[in-house]
Each structure stands twice: as C-alpha cells, then as structure tokens.
Image (cartoon, rainbow, N blue to C red; front, side, top):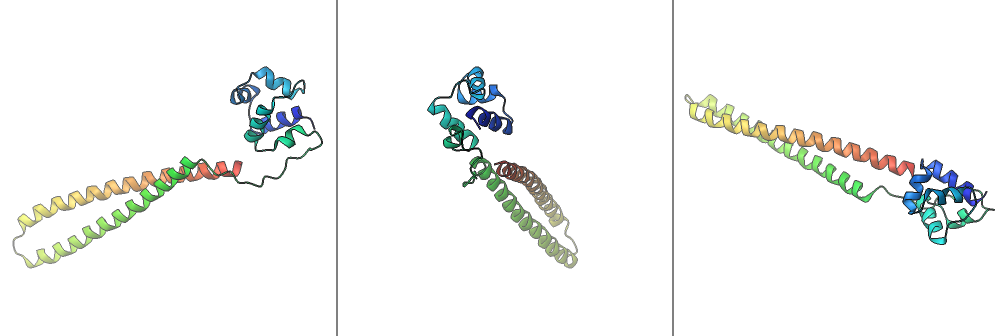
Length: 170
C-alpha cells in the first residue's frame, strides 16, 4: 500500500476533506492531492505532522511493505480542560447538595422548635412575623441551591458524555 493510499484512507476515516487537511498542515489542497495520487511525497516535517495527526508512525506511512496500522499502545485522554470542567461541575453538585441538606435540616429543626414554642405561648404574633421572613429567606436559599444543583448536574452530564465520546473515538 502506497503513501497516497494510506493518507487518503486515514483522511477519510477522520472525515476530513483535502482542504481541511491542507489547512491543518499549512499547505495547499493541490499538495495534498499530489500526495494522495503518489505524484510527490511530503517533506519530512509534514510526514511527522501527518503521523501525529492520525496517531500512526512515520514508518507506517512511508514503508510500502507495511500495510496494516500498528496497534495503538497509548491512550489519548480527553481534552484536559473538559476534564477540569467536569471535576468542577461535580464539585459544584456535591457542595450544593451538602448546602441543600444543611439548610433543609435547619429549616426543619427550626420549624419543630417553633411549633413547640408556639404551643406553649399564648401570644406569639411578633415571633411569627420574624420567623416568617427567616423561613422565606431559607426557602429562597433552598430554591437557589436546587437550581445550582440542577444546572451543575446537567453540565457535568454533558461534559461526561463529551469526554466519553472523545475517548471512545480515539
């Protein structure tokens, strides 16, 4: 199998046009076409770029007697920024859930304490007004935390799918 056939096969496997490959290599489309037609060979710098781009060895590209791609012995990890963003989203979900539990339990125990106190008192109108605003504040915080949990979980799920897809494609 010649260099041109191998290059064309690799390019099509990745779903690239000759123009896209040429842009990535900083050459003209005509140069890529000549390489694929085996009219010329790229210089050594471009051979190394092509080998890195398609995760094959330069020997595989240039040696006509080697017809099968070598088995990949390395693992390409997903984009490091996607991984960091995924970890940040998961941390946000965790912290928000902890905050939600803390505020929810505080709201519950305050309600229990208020119920006991109000059953013992004859007049609790002032405490009721103040307690109403405290409960309202805590409810707003719980709603905000629920929104943060939902958005963070959605972002984490999408990043997880993106990282998993990228890893599977490589």
